[in-house]
Every structure is written in structure tokens, then in C-alpha cells.
Amino acid sequence: MAMADQEPHSLQSHFMKSNAHHKVDWDFFQSITDAVLLHKDDFNALITKAAEKSRHEPMPVERAILWLGLAELRCRLDVPHKVILSEYVSLAEEFAATDGHKFVNAILDFLHKEVRSTE
Image 1 (tube, rainbow, N blue to C red):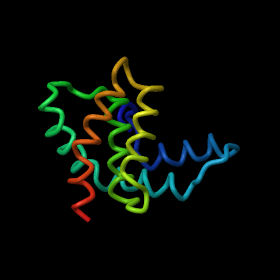
Image 2: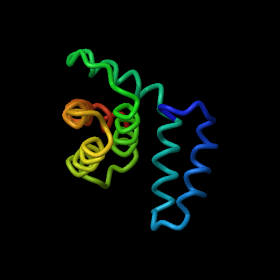
Image 3: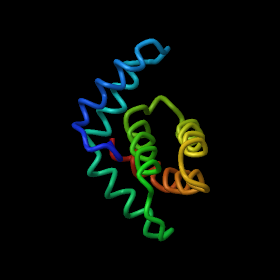
Image 4: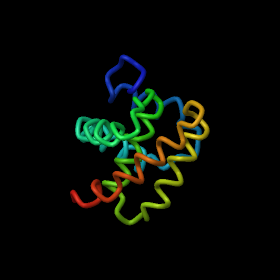
């Protein structure tokens, strides 16, 4: 979604079809991606507010990772925020630009209380 010019639900469907042979928790995938679709504008506002302090404009991959992390923080109150931060920082280490993981960590750490208190 952050990089492709396609309908979000089309991207979800394509991902599910092309990865059907993988062991994936499809209910989790669907709930998190649906939460991103539902709250993306709110998440973007939060990311922009938090990023102002760092003066770093998130790259598309970093923004996508932040969307997912914020969605999980908002929707999965049963998962400790430190676990969520660790997972998304790991994703950023693998897929984001150099030091993108530091930015993702800083933003999610800064926003986790605000996102969880909105429920």
C-alpha cells in the first residue's frame, strides 16, 4: 500500500493467494491489515507528529512497518508493547534503509502509550 498504486483490498487478496502455501496466521494478517486500512489517516497523523522531533521523513517501507506496528498496538492489547516493538524493529532491520530500525523503534516507543490509551 505504501508503494503500490493499487486498491488495498486487492493487495490483501493478492498477498493471500500468492502466499497460500506458507504457514501464516491469516486471521491475524486480516485483522492487522484491516486495522491499517481503517486507521491509516490517524496513524499518518501520529507518525507525522512523532517524526517532527526527529526531522526524519519516513521512507515508504518505514511508514508501512509503522502502520502495522501501530495497528497491532491498537488491536492486540493482549500482546505486551515491548514484544510488538521488538517484532517491528526486527522487520525494519531486515527491510528498511540503514538505521530505519532506529527510527521505527523511536516512533513506536514514543506513540505506544497514546495509541493504547485511545481504546
